[in-house]
Image 1 (cartoon, rainbow, N blue to C red):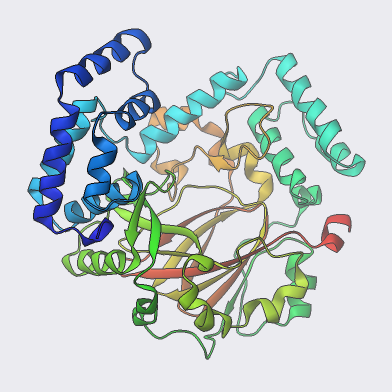
Image 2: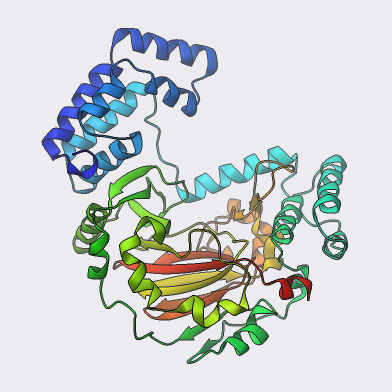
Length: 445
């Protein structure tokens, strides 16, 4: 049993018993003591909850193999409109002191931006103390080739520190820093056909995106081809932050659900025109092996793989959602071939050099592979910001956005280091991503 196999009544009974465990007077005294001594950070509350007497036995009795499975089951019934499950889930979180309002996307990103500035000891313009900039330069000297290091050291001294750290992360992934001087595009080119030779010469080497608008013969015709993997468990992102009426998924996956339950619930939300509260993000097809044959028939890596370095581990990854499911603005350190399988995708692209205008987020100068996400809310133009937001992100007004619309069959080459946010269509939508390391000839060219 377990996971999505519980009925609504069984889920209600489980939550009622869990609430009894959490409301036990001895356990509540431990919670109050934790609040008094530490301020009760969220992770500490979760650790204490895991030790609540009887909780693990209760999970096993109802067939849950993990906390993520339990969350998936509860959120599934909430998503299907069960008010009793929703109320009991709220009472359960409240009993732990975890019932906090979900921040909007704009609130969350503004808070993270302030935390980044505090961590780097920057002022609002991104100016950092000399000691912090020296620490960054030491990393550049230690981690990069002489040519890459010289390219970064020639950048203006008034470059915001978080932008410099973002470019350091790109360079560490093998992205050549000549991308800072690439020609400026006014639009992403679209081609009816694309040979590997043209892709390599005109797009991969100069790091310029392109869309091939051609429907592969083997492209699946509908969602139904996914049903063969319905018995598999998948990890989902839940509890999106809202940007107006659009769900933005910025957290890590936090729940497990049967793939068939996810597909059924997504279809239900599509038909009822309501927001689906979870999203299948960056899932390797090694977790859905029944789909491998249909995906391999597309022969994307066989057609274009010579233009890139090694593929990333676990092969092709998929993203599936509905109701304008949206990602944060970020960049990846890998070359990307993105195929729209069904539905549609709207994508905003910014060149790597726009790091100075996009306010990268991070935790520490010394933390590798950080500063890949932006504090700018996705799909928001500078002119749409409030005066306060314009004052905080004044540099964003100089950023150069390109918009791409992908429909079923379209293939986008997204060069490593390009900033992007992705938004799905109202109807169910699916993309496949083939990621590759940067080709050695491109890195050393």
